[in-house]
Figure: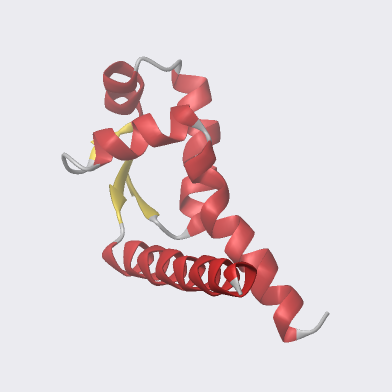
Length: 105
């Protein structure tokens, strides 16, 4: 696999969580600060087993980090991951603008 292909795979992994409404709800709850699985389930109105499943996707994307404290797992937004997401979205906007300019010619 070449670097371009790996970059596409990484980009898909980063963006995938943001097309699911439930994941968007979880991110909105995390914007208020660190939350345990139970709190996320309650505040996002999502079953706890579903929260655990979706949090794996968010952690895999790098936008969310997890912390264990005994038998509890806490999640928080990762500033570095959010910065990578922001840079990727800005890059995608540039590509879209280039495509539009090319089409308009």
